Amino acid sequence: MLSVAVHRLPLARTFAIARGARTEQPVVRCRVEWEGAAGRGECAPYARYGETPEGVAAQVEGMAGWLSDALRQGPETARAGLLAAAPPCAARNALDCALWDLQAELEGRRVWEIAGVPAPGAMRSVLTLSIDHPAAMAAAARTLPTDAIKVKLGQGDGRDGDRIRAVRDARPEAWLMTDSNEGTPEGQLDDLLDACRAARVDLVEQPVPEGSEPMLERLRADGALEGLVLCADESCRKDADMAALARAYDAVHLKLDKTGGLTRALVDAAAARAAGLSVMVGCMLGSSLAMAPGAVLAAAAGADPVDLDGPLWLAEDEAPGIVAVDGTVSVPEAALWG
Image (cartoon, helix red, strand yellow):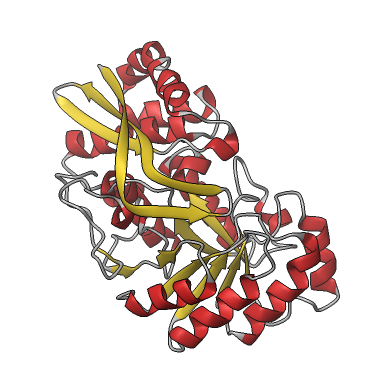
């Protein structure tokens, strides 16, 4: 039996990125019951890819007939078939993760044992600073109980360099990454890169729109990216060509809502490493139910740090949660997932 529901999770505070601000996070959760066991999955519909909560819920519900047939041979076979039955998207992620959880309960094993990957241990997550005035972001950075910080940029107001410098001055010892969510105008890119280099930014995520890879390849050939680690996020989606991305980027940011689940993400992580790319594992905003499979992926990919602080933005998380206030991600308990 398949059940699906949309949940609108209130945020503890406003979350602002280049595409706008929000005070709640809609998620879609599904539950698959079979042979006396049950598995759960959660996904976050993303408007950037034309997804809505109701549309994603309908996609998952529309898989009920297929799922009933696919499960006749068990959840592992169903997971494999799901890759062809649905495109990479949030809906497929929720169902894929529910099938992993179901298989773990049926077999009495943890997901990482089934997948044959290292068990997740305690790992550090970046904590995110949403876009604000430089002084406000610096003040917020001083209060973050972590040594790994993600700085949201991309408002296009010409002040991103000031934001980077302010945060670095406030936290001279921290591991820093920036994330423009494709929002840096081409005319401001050189200034952004110079500011990141001067501030010793450890990772520069998706400063320009998907499709700008030829420009980044030219900049790399000219030496303009020297001393920087560029990470693809929005450019790394669907069935990404990792070898092609490696010509423009040094790293990729894998998110289960983009890969369409853990099954495909494990394949993408291996392909990325084979192409010479390092891997960051991240998330949309969501509860620890959505972060748990991300922790498994992070362990498999050797990601450090990770970007799984989504639950810390919620007014209330799923229990037992896996993300502490300082960003430490713990091993998910079987009672939560997997």
